[in-house]
Amino acid sequence: MQVKVKNNKLDYVLLNRLLELNPGIELPALEPDIYQSKEWLTMPDQNQSIASQVESRAIIEQLVSRFIIEGGSLNSSEMVRYNLNTILVYIQDHIAETISIDFLANMACLSKDHFIRIFKKILNIPPGEFIITKRIEKAKLLLITTDKPIKRIIEEVGFKSEAYFSRIFKKHTSYSPSDYRRNQTI
Image (cartoon, rainbow, N blue to C red; front, side, top):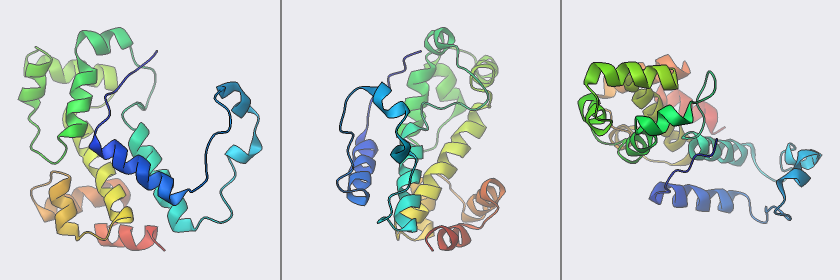
């Protein structure tokens, strides 16, 4: 299955940061089969700090998160049929805003209840949980890659309440946001 996702400004920022963290790293050949047996692909760069390795990994996870669905394979015809690729891109691009399930259902030309059932059937997660997961992923990335105050990060990932964000963040990571930042950047 081939999935195409339109890039956005954040993708460029993340890729540029990844290049800053990993200078001189490039693939010397364009043929993917060459890399199947190369041991050096799995070895960490000896000159890279642990913080840079963690940040690089977080950036890569953020970039590919739109393509990875836990729990199995996607039915591409159902993804297209229900316009879910467009909806996933919309969620990614508008993560800082209030995202209404009614609006997403309207994008898919479905009733809210039917949309929730279809979304969960195809992606193995209800749309509300999916949005929260994406917000937490972005918050984790911002916590370890920036010095932004936690209140600012909360705004950038679309949470309206600091207490709610802290509770949900701890549920997903077992850490408070400040503890997560401290433990991941050591």
